[in-house]
Length: 101
Image (cartoon, rainbow, N blue to C red; front, side, top):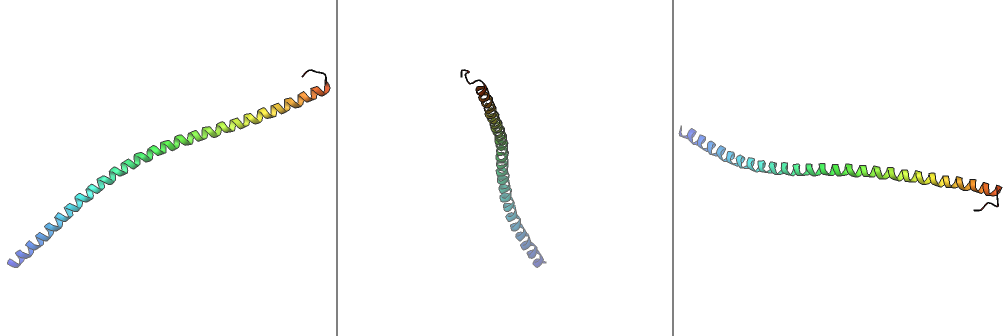
Protein backbone atom coordinates (compact mmCIF):
# COMPACT_ATOMS: atom_id res chain seq x y z
CA UNK A 1 0.00 0.00 0.00
CA UNK A 2 2.86 2.34 0.83
CA UNK A 3 4.43 1.62 -2.59
CA UNK A 4 1.17 2.50 -4.32
CA UNK A 5 0.91 5.70 -2.30
CA UNK A 6 4.52 6.66 -3.17
CA UNK A 7 3.91 5.83 -6.85
CA UNK A 8 0.75 7.98 -6.90
CA UNK A 9 2.56 10.81 -5.10
CA UNK A 10 5.46 10.75 -7.58
CA UNK A 11 3.01 10.60 -10.50
CA UNK A 12 1.09 13.52 -9.01
CA UNK A 13 4.27 15.58 -8.63
CA UNK A 14 5.31 14.69 -12.19
CA UNK A 15 1.89 15.71 -13.52
CA UNK A 16 1.92 18.89 -11.41
CA UNK A 17 5.34 19.84 -12.83
CA UNK A 18 4.15 19.15 -16.38
CA UNK A 19 0.97 21.13 -15.72
CA UNK A 20 2.98 24.12 -14.45
CA UNK A 21 5.28 23.90 -17.46
CA UNK A 22 2.35 23.66 -19.86
CA UNK A 23 0.59 26.54 -18.11
CA UNK A 24 3.73 28.69 -18.54
CA UNK A 25 3.97 27.65 -22.20
CA UNK A 26 0.30 28.49 -22.67
CA UNK A 27 0.85 31.95 -21.23
CA UNK A 28 3.83 32.53 -23.51
CA UNK A 29 1.91 31.25 -26.55
CA UNK A 30 -1.07 33.44 -25.69
CA UNK A 31 1.20 36.47 -25.44
CA UNK A 32 2.86 35.59 -28.77
CA UNK A 33 -0.56 35.12 -30.36
CA UNK A 34 -1.76 38.50 -29.12
CA UNK A 35 1.41 40.18 -30.44
CA UNK A 36 1.06 38.46 -33.83
CA UNK A 37 -2.62 39.38 -33.98
CA UNK A 38 -1.73 43.01 -33.25
CA UNK A 39 0.99 42.95 -35.95
CA UNK A 40 -1.49 41.40 -38.37
CA UNK A 41 -4.06 44.11 -37.67
CA UNK A 42 -1.45 46.80 -38.32
CA UNK A 43 -0.32 45.15 -41.55
CA UNK A 44 -3.92 44.70 -42.67
CA UNK A 45 -4.73 48.38 -42.18
CA UNK A 46 -1.49 49.35 -43.98
CA UNK A 47 -2.42 47.00 -46.85
CA UNK A 48 -5.90 48.52 -47.14
CA UNK A 49 -4.37 52.00 -47.14
CA UNK A 50 -1.95 51.00 -49.90
CA UNK A 51 -4.80 49.48 -51.93
CA UNK A 52 -6.67 52.79 -51.66
CA UNK A 53 -3.57 54.71 -52.77
CA UNK A 54 -3.05 52.27 -55.64
CA UNK A 55 -6.65 52.73 -56.74
CA UNK A 56 -6.21 56.51 -56.68
CA UNK A 57 -2.97 56.27 -58.65
CA UNK A 58 -4.59 53.98 -61.20
CA UNK A 59 -7.48 56.39 -61.67
CA UNK A 60 -5.06 59.29 -62.12
CA UNK A 61 -3.12 57.25 -64.66
CA UNK A 62 -6.31 56.59 -66.65
CA UNK A 63 -7.14 60.30 -66.59
CA UNK A 64 -3.61 61.16 -67.77
CA UNK A 65 -3.77 58.60 -70.60
CA UNK A 66 -7.19 59.85 -71.70
CA UNK A 67 -6.04 63.48 -71.64
CA UNK A 68 -2.92 62.61 -73.63
CA UNK A 69 -4.95 60.78 -76.27
CA UNK A 70 -7.37 63.70 -76.52
CA UNK A 71 -4.43 66.10 -76.92
CA UNK A 72 -2.93 63.94 -79.66
CA UNK A 73 -6.23 63.69 -81.55
CA UNK A 74 -6.74 67.46 -81.28
CA UNK A 75 -3.20 68.11 -82.52
CA UNK A 76 -3.70 65.83 -85.51
CA UNK A 77 -7.07 67.47 -86.24
CA UNK A 78 -5.63 70.99 -86.21
CA UNK A 79 -2.59 69.95 -88.25
CA UNK A 80 -4.83 68.39 -90.93
CA UNK A 81 -7.14 71.39 -90.87
CA UNK A 82 -4.26 73.81 -91.34
CA UNK A 83 -2.90 71.69 -94.19
CA UNK A 84 -6.29 71.68 -95.93
CA UNK A 85 -6.70 75.45 -95.47
CA UNK A 86 -3.15 75.99 -96.76
CA UNK A 87 -3.88 73.92 -99.88
CA UNK A 88 -7.14 75.77 -100.58
CA UNK A 89 -5.35 79.10 -100.09
CA UNK A 90 -2.67 78.03 -102.53
CA UNK A 91 -5.35 77.15 -105.10
CA UNK A 92 -6.91 80.56 -104.66
CA UNK A 93 -3.62 82.37 -105.11
CA UNK A 94 -2.99 80.41 -108.29
CA UNK A 95 -6.33 81.63 -109.68
CA UNK A 96 -5.91 85.17 -108.35
CA UNK A 97 -2.19 85.91 -108.20
CA UNK A 98 -2.70 89.63 -107.55
CA UNK A 99 -4.72 89.23 -104.37
CA UNK A 100 -3.06 90.88 -101.39
CA UNK A 101 -1.72 88.49 -98.81
